[in-house]
Image (cartoon, rainbow, N blue to C red; front, side, top):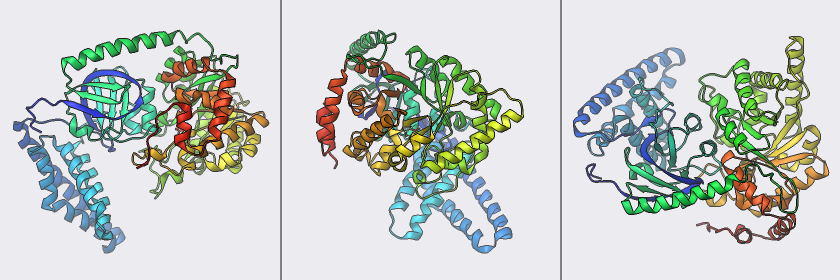
Length: 583
Ligand code: PEP
Ligand code: MG
């Protein structure tokens, strides 16, 4: 694409957070640990970028030679040989040629050129049949990281600065980058990959700005500085749109504004069905900054406070005092309403860069959630100390993530009891009568719901994970998206049985996965027996509106019909939803 021609056109994607936005594109390769801003360079900048490249290649080569020597001394020749391969790859003319082409032909800055070239070469290697060559893909990724480390040394990593009115365009959202986005500056987000229930998507959704995911080639089609209209209703982005399109969007914006104003009338009204059943409608939040939005929408408290984001935006494990202050600030916004604080849930697609976990072939099936907390009890103890202290002044409860079975729950409860004893011995002020709940998001917990109900005070269903594990479909995968179906008959039968068993045991049960925030599913969830939903603050009023226009009789009849269905397609037709057939 000639950089002087005006870039224009339209790209399609999937709506992950609805709304309309206009703003200036800023491209950011946030998928890497190192955040690389991509920008178009002018012809007279090319030379300087190539000089930077050569310097970085030389520095990385020195680093590798140095490392090789050290490893040779400590571990011997065989281990040091690994670096031989890295050095050979680094010296290969093809790598330098590829990166140079990025600056010279595609007119992009050297950091973005490194990133693109490594990505391209990695995918070429990854497709080779010969195992030795295929494994070189990992070496290349490592080299890419080293090069970017050197090139971005003086730039604030993971903390990109976005000007006011930006639309962030990125290949993939990282939770740690998303956690730092600010709704005051970001108008919209456009992502090439991603999944509806990926953590970074959930966090971006909480920003309350239009968000499109699975927009193929967004990074190629859009350039930094392009004027964008993000249509988070129809799922499309207009690049430098014509006056005609802009006029069309003026009209749509005023319609949307009128709809939102009408929804505001819902704020003071209770979430009650048309035949009088009161539903508890609380909010999911990830940051203290989301709590005011939940309070403004008159949520019945916070049904899920994901604390991992408290950890993600730091560069160290937050101390007890730091956590206490952050949780207290959040609870203060919600007071006197209740806040369900979920214990740290890292692992899987929520890595913590300063707390590296050993590499696992299937991280989603690896050490995460409660298992991880039990393996690192110091994290569990520090966090529960902070929450128990807060419980002295604010109504909070503890929610255990990714519970596998009764043994997990008992082990955590034993640690919490010892934390209480320790706090008492220290004469700290705290309230020991804290409710403890379990997330139901693994098939094992779902099967054992009756027994788990005896161990805890309340239950909360995490459909985002439950769907991925029941349907063996990665929640972050773009390719498997047609298989990730919250209204799959298997999921709905499990949900129906969870609601019924919790009812028999007289145990509070709610749904806090993203499914609860989709108004298209509200009637069905009520019909399946749920009386408590927790949703993103931006979805509260739409869901409340649906609850208020539903009778329990209709909801039950719908659930009965749906539970007779064999396929997603049949179920969706009962819900009045379009179905995308699998390829
Ligand atoms: C879930 O899995 O549905 C859930 C609420 O937890 P998270 O999305 O944080 O994994
Ligand atoms: Mg989960």
